[in-house]
Amino acid sequence: MKIFAKEKGIAAGKDITDELNALLKELAKTDEQKELVFEPGEYCILSEKCETEMLYITNTVGDDEFKGTEVPHKAAVALNLKNIRNLKITGNDAIFVIDGKLTNMAVQGCDNIEICGIAFKTVNPDFHELKVIKKTMFSVDFELCGDSLYEKNRSGKGFSFIGTGYQSDFYKGRINWGYLHKIFADDKNHVVRVKHPFFTAVSIKEIEKNLFRVRYPNTRRFSVGETYGIYDAIRQYNGIFISQSKDISLKNVKQYFNYGLALICQDTENITIDGAYFAPEKNSGRYIASCADFMQICMCKGDIKITNSYFEGAGDDCLNVHGIHFLIVKIDGQKLIVRFMHPQSHGFNPLHEGNLIEYIDPRTLLTKGKAKIKASKLINEYNIEVDVDNTIGAAAGDMIEDITMCPNLYFTGNTLNRIITRGLLITTRGRVLVENNHFISTEMDGVLFSNDAKSWYESGRVLDAAVRNNRFDYCGGYNVEILPENGSTGSIVHGDFIVEENDFNSPVGGGINAKSAESLIVRNNSVKNIKSGFVKAKDVKNLLCDI
Image 1 (cartoon, rainbow, N blue to C red):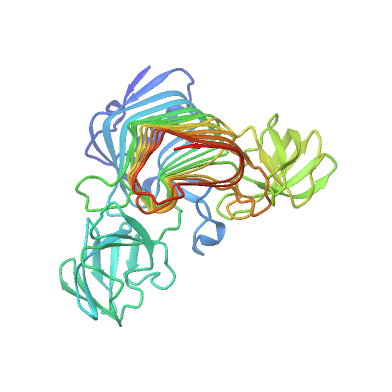
Image 2 (cartoon, rainbow, N blue to C red):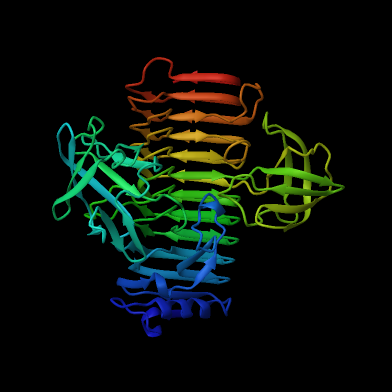
């Protein structure tokens, strides 16, 4: 069955909010194979007309980060796919133009969905970049870039950025916002976290439209040509959210800006991302496309395939793939009460009947016992009751890891640039292949294999990973790091790693750093501009190094 959006009143060049929402609800009424076809063009979606959803999204926003008047986790959604099966969306390069703050797309409880050839563009977001045009000993002239709008405050003092759904004073957050970014004057691919550009500012005045002179006690930290960001990085509104779904494919999907994360997948089986473009729109004047990570893959299973894609300008990591360590707070017979420990991840239940779990010592990250889940239910936002077939080895204060929710990862043929933290943070027991990618610039590690039960509580062990035939041009940290957070226990946490046939050309960071692994093979790599001690290893049982 083929459905043409235009025949449903969804035409380019107009507001389609109501018509699109009604059509997506209609598509959920039949399970037969269907295709929704859009014509090329721009389609307007108004945030105030979108329906809202209660979205408990991992790694996003904690309850205490919402304003007093807001309902925590309630967000408007532009494209809301709910309980839909066997659907292909053919976008033909349709652009959904978002006016206001919302989540671009939610895919919940869906099966066999393919989305091709669409883009999301946000009009005048509450995200602003300023370029240093001139500086003296006590003043800096900033040019406001992109499509940002502003007005003079009613008090007559200062200015505010303005747009749909917001009015933000220039000085908002200048004392405690320390997670903003700076783009270097001589290297536009290089981005670092800095304090608010107006921190310590004494006064600000408009010289002409989009040009401001700001006075400081001193201006040592500024250089002409640098670009600074101003935005609230609370991850309340995000890009594409996929949850409790199976066999989801995104092909040639573009996102030019996100207030939070660009793509979050949780409790989902088999995800394909091919030909994605998460980067600022060309000629937009912006350098950053997402205020937080580009992709979070959490508590998923099956195959995660991310191929032939371009990622540029992330306010955190490019990709995280991980599970969750849940704290055992109570054991009663064969029943466990387990808790989400990080405030930004809670409110959903990925622990399913038949899944296998392990009891984990949070200090060593080693297994103390295994069990099968017989039943589970969410008691409240933070606690899950889990019935298991045995509790041998379990103790209150230990963690559980669901080892069924550990996907394979294939990350191949991608380009990463202007990433403010790590390129990839990987901690999954599935087969991992990182191959034929170009890491142009990451401020921290290029690839980090982690595992922790004390901070972000992101599990778990990595058993079989290959980093092969990639090019690393700039990594502020290590090119490849194997670093489970098990302190100095000496425990062997991770399994087998191969790092081969890569082109390491990063002059700043280190080469390869590894600890607490069963084996590490490093061979046939090209190494340039890296100081001696290319491979560092501690508590690695079997090490073969032939660079």
